[in-house]
Image (cartoon, rainbow, N blue to C red; front, side):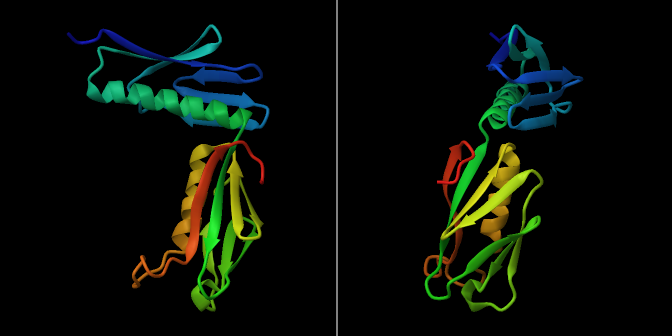
Length: 183
């Protein structure tokens, strides 16, 4: 028999405030504020007794899947404003030592494979990039923006027209963690 109702409950920790207006969720915490619009999702979002409840009635497969997705997004927003996210990336090169520096909202990768022109990766708004030796740290409170910035850096060092099993030069994600500290 088909379920009448499905619900997921996301607890709100101390020091975090959540506001819901017309499926637009705004989460504020000690590290900042995140906002996201869930108006396209076929779910009902409500705040109740120190938690956020995501509910769907008479769910089909799509609605049941969206229930978990929306709840996970809200959980990630709460985790972001309380602790933040850090992606640690590693520079790998065989012969030509590359150098990485941050200029505003861009990451410049110089001398990659001996190239003269620097390769450029875009840094998403609200994300901080720190270069420390052979490591590149990408930090922020929005998990999607941090992940997209790390992907932009990795894609900027993609080697084309060569065997990727032999030419391993690039900047790759080594570790993903919760918290915004440079180790």
